[in-house]
Amino acid sequence: MKRIILVGKPNSGKTLLFNQLTGLKQKVANFPGVTVELKSGQFAGYQVVDFPGAYSLHTLSKDEQIAVEKLHEALLDDNTALIVCNLDATRLESSLVFGLQVQRLAKQHNKALIFALNMIDELGRFGHHIDTAALSKQLGSPVYAISARTLEGIAEFKTALQQDAAAASAIPELSDLRPDAASDLKQARQLAAEHGIKDTVVLKNQNRIDSFMLNSISGSVMFLLVMFFLFQSIFTFATPLMDAVESIIAYIAEVLTEALGPGVIHDFINDAVFGGLGSFLVFVPQIMVLTLIIGLLEDSGYLARAALICHRPLSYFGLSGRSFIPYLSAHACAIPAIMAARTIESPRKRLITMLTIPLMSCSARLPVYALLIAVFIPDIQYLGGLVNLQGIAFFALYFMGILTALMISLLLSRSDKIEPTATDMPFILELPTYRLPHWKPLLQRVLQSGKHFIYRAGPVIFMVSVVIWVLSYFPAGGDDLAHSYLGTIGHFIEPIFEPLGLDWRYGVAILLSFLAREVFVGALGTLFGVSNADENVAGLAENIQQDGLALGAGLGILLFYVVALQCVATVATLKAETGNNKLVIGVVVAYGLLAYLLAAITYNLIG
Image (cartoon, rainbow, N blue to C red):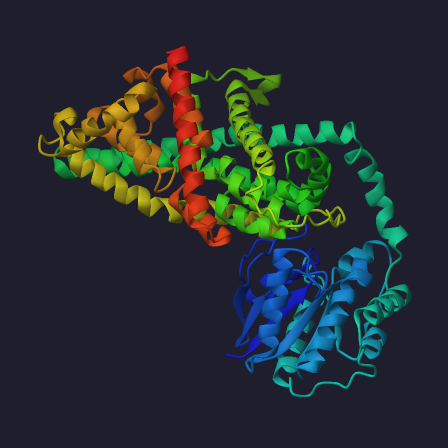
């Protein structure tokens, strides 16, 4: 299949254009370094490939290196029909520097190239217009004015794209085949001066807001408030949705189990399906709320400012301001966050960031936190319900994960075994303009996060729930859990967890949760469903309270999950990104032992 290659500088609307062409729902955000791997989709019989953003063919970061390497490979491929270079109309000079380099490279490989002049809606706000016909003539390649956000010019661009791809062999002659990067920069400045909007016009409003947002005092206070709001909202905004989901699950469970009547099938549906899988589904709204708030911060352009604010304090711990974005992304999922660390220019800081990302509390830990907080922390509300004690506890757990990551980063940065020969690169970050979120892809992303959470963890939890139910139900038919097959296995491993104040049921749930953290809740839901068949299947927190789990043991579990390395998929991603098996195994063992030690100390101190 013939290919259309989509390239451009970061934060230029490239991935949103890719989504509009292919109908896919890739992540779109307003900060540099989002796309760190190639994405592909279909358009009019062509395969469209979205490359990571790059500022130049002379690379600094790993994601730029990937983009340039793959671009060279694509230009050597006969199936590459057309190169589409996306330009940011509001920052024409910086876009054209890379665009002119790509154009020269495409000419050398006899490949057709067109320019998509994106974000023209932003120019419209300032009353500026670019003469694309004149710009196209001067560049020697077609230029199409579009807005991937408002869809302005998209229909015409799609038609032209098909025509240009079909006529890809007819490459216009360049009037001047520029010999070097210096001439590219010179021409980019000339073209931007002639056609682009003045920087002072674009930056006027941005600088006024940044004078507050980036101020050492007001910016720091604003950053702390934003972060507190992020984690507080997980409880405050998600609670009504969680209650609704819990009520629906409880109602369906009651109707189905009453219709089935007593027996093995009744017990299986009640304990394995609703006790295990149902207990996990209750927490999906929290994942969606977390994704929504992070998405708002991304799309508005605030995350890049947050990275800039964090650069100085993070540098003390051997990190970069760019480490902030993978760290925050890790609160949704560690796997893309580890890959996002490719945007960090310094190999040493990139490795330290990747090794400490698993200490960020990912969305898979949300169900564990929410369950145990509901058990031990009362729902006391402040400020008319905007702040509650459970949300504060949530914030404390996330803060502890961040603090632990920083402390370990500090230790690693002092070690001469972490990339000892690597040379640190300068911290360079483009500050995007402030923009209103593009609501459609943002809401799609929120829905996708919930679906992805269910599709990724749901099958694993269901299978684990079935296995646990079978092992715990037989041979006594659910009447004697302690002497079931699972009870026998659990009592064998129980001595490992006794120093943590936990019995074999919690030990089984913890071990199984290394498949996926959410399994802890599903496993306990199944186990308590079997042992408390008459209880409300959705009320797992109430069952744990009635079971009498000690406060020290419960807090120990929370600390264990804050520190212990995440699921096996995270370990596999770390291995793939670092290429060092010994290092990854060492991290898994070290974090596991530290988590176990913290849990044991907590239990023995509090009881």
